[in-house]
Image (cartoon, rainbow, N blue to C red; front, side):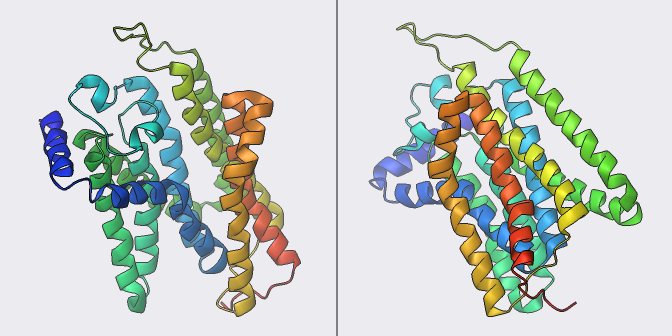
Length: 318
C-alpha cells in the first residue's frame, strides 16, 4: 500500500512535468535549514520559556530519531522497490535509513511548538495556524518527492507530538521542583553518551546490489546520528551555563533588541556552510559533526544571550 501511494504520486509528478517538485524541495530544505531560526529568535527576543519548550522538544526528537533509525535500519523506498524514482535532487539529500522521517521529526516539534506558543496571543493566531499547517505540508513533501513512505512520516509526526507533550509535562514538573533540573541534565548527558556508544558498536545490515556496491553504508548513516545526538549534548551544556551564570531575559520589542537578535541569526546560517566542513576535515565525519552540533547549539542557547546581555540591550518589561 505504501509503495502504491508513492507510485501514484510519482505518476502525478510525471503527468504535471514536475511542476510542484521545486516547491516541495524548498519545503523540505526550509524545514531542516531555516525553521529553527524562528524558535531561536523567539527564545532570544519574545519568550524564553516558550522558546526553550520548543527547542527542548526538538532535542528530544534529535536523540530518539537516530536511535530508532539505526535500530530499525529500514531501507529507502527506491531500494525497496526499483520502480520508485525520487524527484529532482532529493535522492542526494535523503541520506540514511528511512524510518522514521528525520525531516518530520525536525519540523514537527519546532513548528508545533511555535504554533502552541503563538496561539496564546489572539492577534497572532493566524501565524500559529501557518506553523501548524506547515507540518502536514512537510510530511506530504517527503512522500511527494519519493524519499519516505507514509509510515515514515506518520511515525515521525507521532514521535514529535509525544515529545511536545512530554516536554510540557517535564516543564510543569520542573516548575514545582526546579532543584531537580541539574540531575535531569546529568541524566540526559549520560543517556546521550550511551546512545553514541550504542549506535557505534551495534551491528548493521550489509546488503549489496548486483554490482557489488553496498546498499547503505552504516558509517555514513552514523554521521547524522552523531550530529543529532550532539545537539542534545550541546543543549545540556549550554542550558547549565545559561541558567547558572547568564540568566538572560528576552530582549523584547525594542528596535535595538530586534535588530541585534536578527543579526545574531546570520552566523547560524553561515556556520553550517563554513564552520562545519572545517571540523569535519579536522576530526572526521563522526566527531566533526558531533563537535559542530555542540558548538552550534551552545552558540544560540548560551553564547548569544550572554553577548546581548553584556551589550546591555534592555530586556522587555515583565
